[in-house]
Image 1 (cartoon, rainbow, N blue to C red):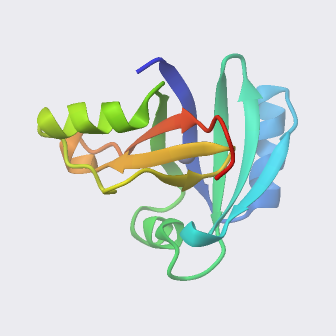
Image 2 (tube, helix red, strand yellow; image 1 turned 90 degrees about the vertical axis):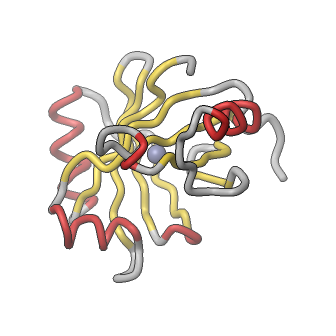
Length: 136
Ligand code: ZN
């Protein structure tokens, strides 16, 4: 794991959350991106070497909608940057972590991503992400 790449925060109202986090961080959101397959609209803000990813559900079946229904708004996941996601997934599987994806999938911000079950990490949903070197 190279560093914390971003922290994902589940929000009900993306416009409102962008305003709040822009004030908090002193930096405007630099990008919005729809991840259709996950049912989320994301917005990114920079904070030094790290980012904050705000996540709003686009439909009731979205994992973010379910998360908010259960727990309310708040930190949804912590994402770590890795250089080789396939190798990292293999290592983590061997180490006994429960990985929620068989294969890495396309995430927001030009990343390949996978998730580690919160039960494997003391209640925190962990995302691994790798920069996509080329578009597939
Ligand atoms: Zn994320």
